[in-house]
Image: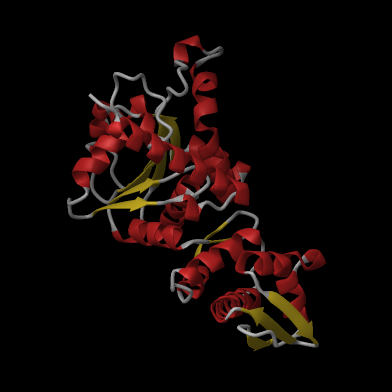
Length: 331
């Protein structure tokens, strides 16, 4: 062994687990080697890791945790590997098993929906344990999808009698009056992500029946004014595009036995410059209120293509640099 190099050994239970770990054309192991600067070899079902003591130890922890996920039937990809490396580097590798052990919901096609990150786990737990939850974070963190999943679970377990999903109907400078078609045609493009999530969990036919019975309601935020929403699971999506007045109106609509989830990304505000985001305002004043939880998701919780994480990180770095530059400019 080269001077300064350490060696770590892992014995794998079966060749099938080894194949699942390595991935197609050994792409998973090659990625681990590249990210942690180690060399990984196999003989039969024994894995040997060589590298610096720190890197070899980290690689062993990552692989051991990935093997646990494989035994539970999880598919390993670059996103999972990157997240496992992040957790090991942060000394939080034991949370990997906690995250994966909890089935949040099951889709109409029988697919199990599970949390994939620590942030998502905190978010789901907050929804279970609080009346009002704010899920704030970038696109791809599962804010809306997990909220809909929890709403479906609450309805199916008879915790609530209806599901209400709403969004502000003004985005990217568009106003409803300028869009073609009748009212339903005008609002549907804004509500499509909510429809898609509901279709996943109920199936299109069941969703249609529930909507016709008034059990599921998907509507623009403006339609919430003047109503009291009791015994319902209510989701306000894309809340960064609500005004302060709209947010206050919405948060004073829910009645007895209701649960409210507000989701949004404060870096994607499409309101006119003179309008303040209701989401930013609410988060700034409601953090200390009992039974309200504010969960901040980050690029680490992004579960889309791995490049999305890198893109969000780059934008966050640029925005922080711009804020620092403006602060340092002479007045």
